[in-house]
Amino acid sequence: MRFNVSLLGWMAGWAWTFVAGGSGLWLLLTAGPWPPTNGWFALVSGLAACPLVAWSLKKYAGIRVSGWLQFAVAVLVFVTGHAALTIWPHR
Image (cartoon, rainbow, N blue to C red; front, side, top):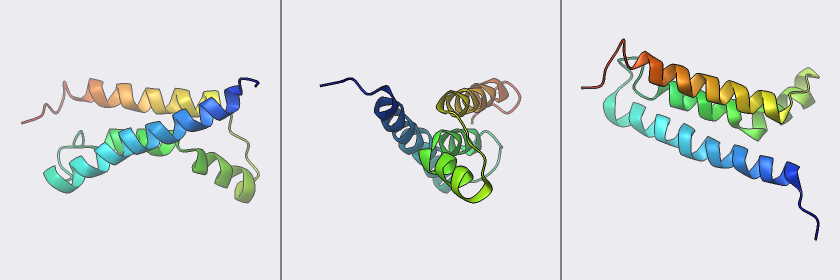
């Protein structure tokens, strides 16, 4: 059996989508949309990591997005959300 790195990346993308995006959505539904740190960054990070977004961009817009770029954007948004907690701390 060969180790398929792209399959591992695809699974990691879906895991990040469900964990980060799901927890961001849950936080928005339970705590409300304000302050901006209440789940927005986690939700956007989850959407950035979603393999379905890359597939849709490739199919409908003709833009190919690498998995590394998706991962970098997802991490950047997530880290930016944690940095934003210094501006809008949680209750």
